[in-house]
Image 1: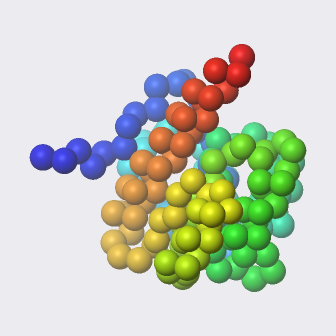
Image 2: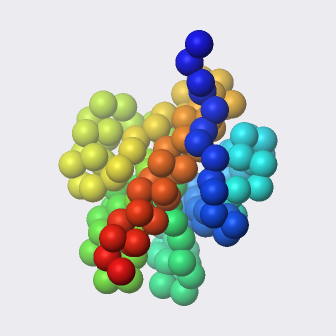
Length: 150
């Protein structure tokens, strides 16, 4: 039998996630389902625009950024570009989590430096399990790289 549960976070500090989506209802749905899966391992900060996300990244530390693709103003790929160019947060793992886009957007996101591309199409619990697993993996990988630099 395949184990679909995410790896457990062993550090006493929760994984800090910056979640960007222009639809507040989508932010809340994701928060509810992810919290159901992780049981307290995540500290999720939700914002409704890419511009607000960049402001948060300047003033706070995050382990992973999760962004929708299709947003007014700056879309998820443009946000990814801005994150990768930032001195302070260029190495922050980035996940595109979207219901719109498809193969071309996924290809572009990965080419520009996103670590994962996950679709919102289908069962919300299944999507959030995939998202949760990706966040755990990327946060643990980032932590490991940080220790190697020390």
